[in-house]
Amino acid sequence: MTFSADQLSARRDAAVAAVAAQGLIADEDPVLGLLDEQTIRETVGMLHDAFDGVPAIPCVAAKAATLVPLLSYLSTLGIGCEVASPGELAMAKAAGFAPDAIVYDSPAKTVPEIRTALADGVAVNADNFEELARFDAVIAEELGGTPRGRVGMRINAQIGTGSIAAMSTATRTSKFGVGLKDEGARERIISAFVDRPWLNQLHVHNGSQGVPLELNAAGIAEIVDLAVEINERIGHQQITHIDVGGGLPTNFDSDEITPTYADYRAAVEAATPRLFSGEFTVITEFGRSMLAKSGTIVSRVEYVKETGERRIAIAHAGAQVATRTVFMPSSWPLRVGVYDGKGLPRTSEEIAHDVAGPCCFAGDLVAVDRPLPRIEAGDLVAVKDTGAYYLSTPFAYNALPRPAVYSFTVGESGEVEFSCIREAQTVEEVVAEAGSGTFLTSGL
Ligand SMILES: *Cc1c(COP(=O)(O)O)cnc(C)c1O
Image 1 (cartoon, protein in one colour):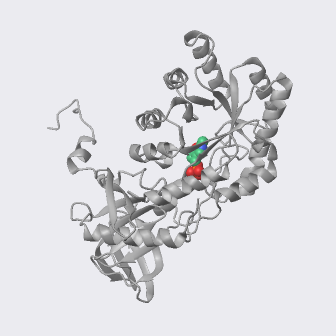
Image 2 (cartoon, rainbow, N blue to C red; image 1 turned 30 degrees about the horizontal axis):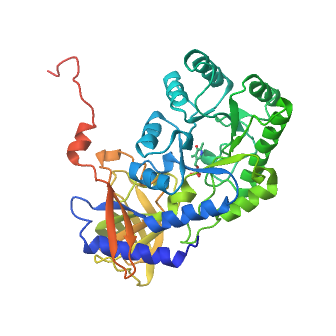
Image 3 (cartoon, rainbow, N blue to C red; image 1 turned 90 degrees about the vertical axis):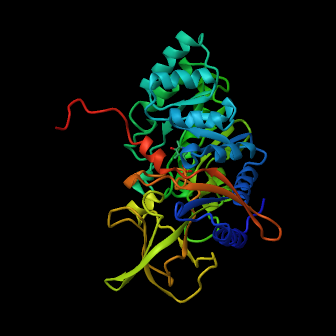
């Protein structure tokens, strides 16, 4: 599968022009999300290529893609689904994933969640020994001693921190999984597998954005060594599946995809060739790297003002759609493209701008002191690389509605077709979500 950054960029420009020409941005809908179907297909194709010849279940992390039509599209592309809550599990089922293509990870599973997941036959990874005891009870009492799907254990390889602390899951004190290097933990993990013939999967997710490839690979190698040791102790191959998590970093500086899934394969294979020997089925759970490049948030610029010698474009893409970027701008910078009202790229000399959102707090800025072509009121701004997490995880600040999301294709002669995969939320729906019931006492 090939990918071209220039073509991605040209498709995005064509889509923004078509958004303007087709009137998708309007007074009622001043901001919307776009997903480029071809970029999704190409990225998924590169993932399949990277695991060519290896038994694998490449999953998408549902939290990066909580839009049922998007999950459904990924399912048709041969992707499975990693879920971490009852809502995500229900979405994965609604999207049509087969139970054995679903992996359930969550650090806080309640007994009913465990019961549903084990009875549905989805693969479930226990986060800790206390949770595993809950699995034991459900399996013994309700499932006749045999779970319907695979059951795994999440291990924290405790290999260290990446550049974003909140994204680093493999620290010594991370809340996730059983710490492999804690005193006595290795033996306790091995015994857990010896005692439970149905425990057949190991899971590790060493972190997300900011965790270097080599660190991730080192953590995966620890888990492969553990799987080999457990199987040797038991005397047969009880562990058949190794779930290596996600966390391939995404480049937010350009339209290039770096590192690639091929780079990932090379780094992990260098650290642990045995993972690719064919003896294990490899499960992956990529989120950001699978979808970031395919998405763009487009917003109309409502006003432009100059104050304190700064040019400020006030648009509609703020914290409600770009939450992480607004609250942690240095960890999550996003590129902003500027188009005129007809959707043609502006090319004038760059001057410093702030690009602000609609939320009522001063820090609601997607770009600060950013050199950009001169922005005018009525222009369109495009916030790039927002296909993972951003579109799917809105923030309800100021009762701002969830914007519409469209997938799009660009035909041979440049014609753009849109499909609405999530309607914009209406004000009536916002009100309906804002609670019901009455206070006990009267106000008078
Ligand atoms: C968030 C998460 C992922 C996806 O991480 P990305 O960095 O988006 O690839 C995968 N597995 C688990 C367990 C996660 O929590």
